[in-house]
Length: 559
Image 1 (tube, rainbow, N blue to C red):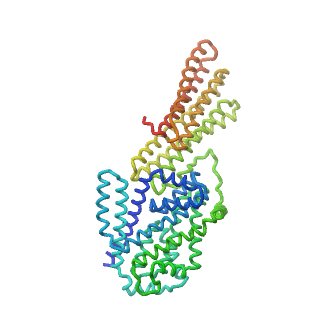
Image 2 (spheres, rainbow, N blue to C red):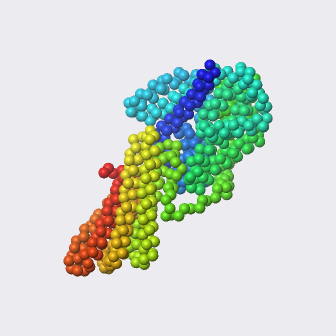
Image 3 (cartoon, rainbow, N blue to C red):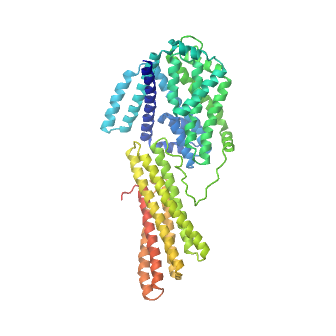
C-alpha cells in the first residue's frame, strides 16, 4: 500500500511538471514574437526591466524560460548586462505566482474545476479553433489535477501519524544548523529536478501533512531559489562572456537574498506567519494556511530582495565582470557557431530566434569571403595570392559546416510541437542556409577562375578590369542589402532594392557578353582571356541570383 501511495506521489509530481511545461509552451506560442519584442523594448531602465521580467514570467509561468531567454538576448547583444540583471530580478518576482496557484490548489477541492476545463480544452484542440488556448487549458487541467492528487496523496500518507517519520524530523532541532541543512537539500534537489515548481509542491505536501515544520519548509524554499539558477547557468555555459555574466548575476542575486534572510530568519518567518494568521509553534495548524505561508514567504523574499538590490545594479554588473573574465576570442577564420553553441533553448520560439541570429552571422562571413575574392582579383604577387586563395578555400569549408550544423539544429527544433508560424519560419531558414552555402560555393568558384587566370598569366585589359570591378561592386551591394535584411526585422524591408540591384547585375552581364564577342572578333584580347573573363562575370551573376534567393526566403516570398 505504501508503494502505491509513493507511486501516486511521484506520478502527481510528474504530472505537475508536465502541466507546467504544456502551459508555458502554449502561452509562448500564443504570445509568439511579442515576448521577444516586450523584452527588447520595455527595458529602458532598471524599474521597467523588473516589471518586464515579472510580466513575462507571469505570462509563461516559468522563471527558467524567462532567464534562459534573457541569457540568449544578451548573447545576441539585444540586451545589455545591466538590462538583463533587472529583467532577472523581475523574473524572480513573477515566478512566485506559481506558488500562489499551488497554495490555492491545496486550500479547496479543485476536482470540480478540472473536468470542465479538460472538456473545453479537448474541444478547442480537436476543432482547431484557438488551439493554443486549448493547449494552455489542457496544461492547466493537468496542473490542477496534479495538485488535487498531491493533496489527496498527502492526506493518505498521513505522515504526522507515522512514528518513524515524526521521530526522524523531530530529531532536527529548530536551529540554524537545521535551516542550513534543509537549505542545502532544497538547492540540490532543485538543481537535479530542474523544476522549482515541483519542489515547491513537495514542500507544501510535507508541510501540510505535518512531516516538517514551517521553518524547515521555508528553508527548502530558500534552497529552491538557489537551485533554480542552475538552469540559466547551464544555458550560458557555451555562450559569450556577457551571457555567462548574466547567469552569474542571477545566482549572486538569489544567494545574496538567502544570506540576508538567514540573518533575520526566525523573526522574518514569524512575521510571514502572522500575516497569514498562523502560529508557527502550534502543534496543529491548518494545512491550507501553511501552503499560503510558503507562498507568502516566497513572494516577500523576492520582492524585498529586489527592493534592496535594484539600486545596486551597476555594482552587481561590476562584480560579475570581475568574476567572469572574457574568453580569448577565436580567430575569425576558425569555424565557430556564435549563438547556438549552447544547445536547444527551452522553447522552439527561442531556438528559432537564435538560429536566425546564427544565419545573420553566416551571411556576414560570406560577405567577408567576397572581400577576399576582391583582394584576389587585384593580387599578382605569388605568395600573397596563395595565402588569400587558401583563406577563401577555408571559408568555403566553413560555409559547408555552418549549413550542416544550423540545419541539424533546426531539425532538432522541428522535432518539437510547433505552431504553423514557427514551422514556416524553419522552412524559410532551411532555404536561407542552403542558398548561403551556394553563395560560398560560387565565391570559391570565382577564386578558382582567378587562380586559372593567375596560373596561365592571362592579363585583362583596362576595360575588362573596370567592368569586373563594377560587377564586384554590384554583388557587394546585393550582399550588404541581404545582410541588413537578415539581421533586422523583415517587416521593415521590401524586395524593391534587391530586385533593382539584381536587374543591374543581369543587364551588366548581358552587356559584357555582347561586348566580349565583339572584342574577341576584333582581337582586342585573346579568346582565352575573354573566356576567363566571361566565366568570372557569369559566376558573379550566379552569386547574385543566390543572394536574391536568400532575400526572398527571409521576406517570406514563395518560390
